[in-house]
Image (cartoon, rainbow, N blue to C red; front, side):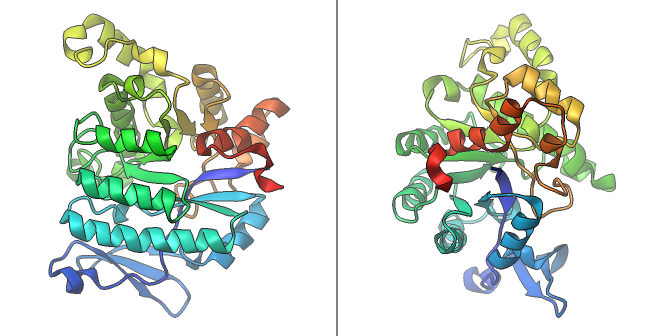
Length: 335
């Protein structure tokens, strides 16, 4: 069995939100004769996406080809739209979440869904989170690594995390709104350098802010192998030890103690790094994630794990068992 916890999806058609709300900044999707579509923002080209970004049939064919049994669906992070009026973000969230729920309901043994919520507004975020879980039957939500520059340690977000814990919702944290991106636009550096830093920012914020300590049952997974965090945990711990006046002001538990208390995906593109992660966090907290269907993703999801010299037990943990744990799905889900 193979479960891919990191895949992205869009509705085939996105309403003209600039016209609807009266201001720009929104993503539009313009379809091309060749079956692709242009994602545009403020009238400028953002990226081209293939039909497998919205077509469930195309996704299922790709899953069959690559041996993926279950995809976890989440929106493309550029759609988070935390910068907008929260009511308008909520409207977009509902559109995206309804589409994901429809795709899941059409193929409930092939897809599970994560919603998106207007994190900039605590009440609306919790309301939509509750709708995702209780009405739409989604498994949780995907959120950004920061919310309009605020770290995930901000008191604004704790009630949302608390609600997620109470609801038994899984949370997937994906880097977005990359810090310093304006200073490193060349060479794709926001994706290559900024994203790993953003993910470490999110993990450190949740550790230092006491989120994991206060909510031990909260199930959180981080994209891209935890970004820069695992490789810099020595530096982070040393900083915590040497300057507790700066690092331990909200939580006095060693950062290193949280290794193995949250999940990370396997998207590191390097077997030595994957083995390093297993050594650091154990083989029960890493779940296969491919970033399908985008270029920085694993070309054939799960191949790094499948083609490795890891034990059969470890491969099974990484390929599906850990994902089921994070999603709180039973092992008989596929029966």
